[in-house]
Image 1 (cartoon, rainbow, N blue to C red):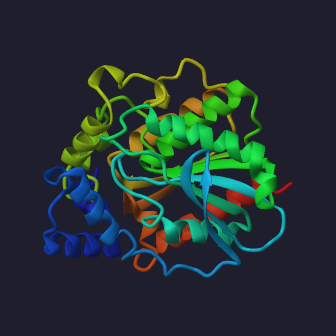
Image 2 (spheres, rainbow, N blue to C red):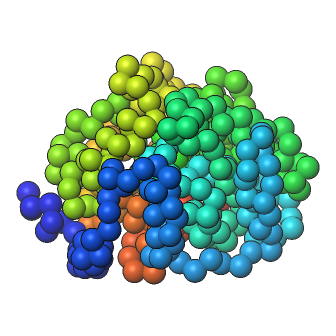
Length: 309
């Protein structure tokens, strides 16, 4: 097997070298407030420019701030989007470009949710917000000119974990869910896989930052709760079809593959997209990493195929 650094594409390696030379303070050495500011300042530097859309509207969903993106005024299916950021950082602004791209490329509406963050609001506050928002959209989408019967949920990183958990609530409450789109999600109770060791340092999402996020979010005794570790749910049968997008050089890749295998074994339709030579968060690097554009198109196709009859 190649050394981890040799697995990177030339563009990804060059980008990581530039990030390293910038010598930014890592998140685990900042306070949550400082980390949120730092993340917001840099979140869209590598992202595609914010695409114009017919509708971009700030609103409130189940008591939380949210933002609606739609490419037309038609009655469209809707995708609830849950941003990444280790349950501690990230907001509507950090993922604005990504949500615009998903809406533009798929033709569906996207509603991004500003769920509560740790450590001010620890587990399961974010889980509760995500499920409340999905249930609200199903019930009230018509008031937004959308079709709440054609509904999906999506998220990246920690948002992917939340999206996976929300799919269980939808199944157990009989809410029709056409798709769970999980982009580089965390699915395991602890960082114990080979990929966590291989890519622990120097591949954008470092082990120290993962520990910092988790410690802010929940207690050690809660880490086997399926709402945090969906791999440990007692039953995966009957969940919504999944599209799982993974990066080869990501500490989370092994648990993402394990989750895809677990869903398939339970009879859940799974589309697995594994992008070689790129790191966690690559889908937000469309200005520099061509794999980001390919991944966006794959996500859009999954949304179209499942949400549009």
